[in-house]
Amino acid sequence: APPHGRWQGPVRQPVRREAADQDKEYVGFATLPNQVHRKSVKKGFDFTLMVAGESGLGKSTLVNSLFLTDLYKDRKLLNAEERITQTVEITKHTVDIEEKGVKLKLTIVDTPGFGDAVNNTECWKSVADYIDQQFEQYFRDESGLNRKNIQDNRVHCCLYFISPFGHGLRPLDVEFMKALHEKVNIVPILAKADTLTPTEVKKKKFKIREEIQQYGIKIYQFPDCDSDEDEDFKQQDQELKDSIPFAVIGSNTVVEAKGKRVRGRLYPWGIVEVENSAHCDFVKLRNMLVRTHMQDLKDVTRETHYENYRAHCIQSMTRMVVKERNRKYGHTHRPVSHSPSLVLFIAWIRYLNTACIVTHIQT
Ligand code: GDP
Image (cartoon, rainbow, N blue to C red):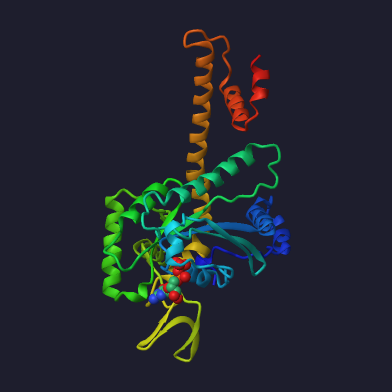
């Protein structure tokens, strides 16, 4: 069923009703949402999800369970000796999935090797660099000549896996989240929740939430509900906010529970079901990620994280031009007074490493 009755699917509204409405001086702009709808469905959607956290916490199992595909077919696991020298690698898997005529290009960015070495100081750096590189590529593309077929590889969300075996956050978790919280939407995950009792899950969640606040970590904030939303929706929204960090269980196997075939983990003492909300928050996480907040995650990436990157870039380009002008003509003598847009234009061309053109413009 569509969540909260909002998503109507790629269905055309019947034209007959439009004709009937025309009698009542109907102009027709009420069909605008449908027009946008049709166009975006035709174009298809894309989403880039990053998973991070030390290896063995169940990241690949969870991603496969989330999207019901095997995204890690050619995965090679390293032994302990190989991991000593290994630096953090960034790998990308893309799949095209389709559901009821809606196409989604899903990209999973994985970070194998993160937190696995003997010394993990600054091992978040290559992850941060990767995110910046995607912003830079997008910035270059949208400032270039052909803006028609820009590939958007910006990371929209990062699921950060926290070990269920520690007492709250480890120093590496704090360092990672603090280094990346201005660049990407971080959603904290309490991994392998089946290894904890319900009371332990509750306590651990509380401790992690407290530490997130204490260390000033800015995780992804769910948007506030509109005041005119119905009570059911408001309650669901509050439950979602209270679930942070999502306690999840992953499994790639189907088992039989109470006569039904379900995705779960079979233990000598019973079965844990991945999609049973009494057992874990898997369904809440999937609903949030796919059904209710995917677009908001993309909007926040574009409007906040990318905008920050872009502003920072433009500031440093302007500074670079001013510095060079001062170096060339001295602080007091100002022979050329370019308009701000020309200054930026020149900086941008420099940025693209075509300094010869700039020399032409200046002379
Ligand atoms: P990754 O290295 O973080 O991608 O972890 P994997 O997905 O490869 O999982 C590592 C091991 O943990 C495998 O043996 C999985 O079967 C197991 N595993 C994955 N998810 C869970 C879970 O939710 N609970 C438990 N108990 N084990 C899990």
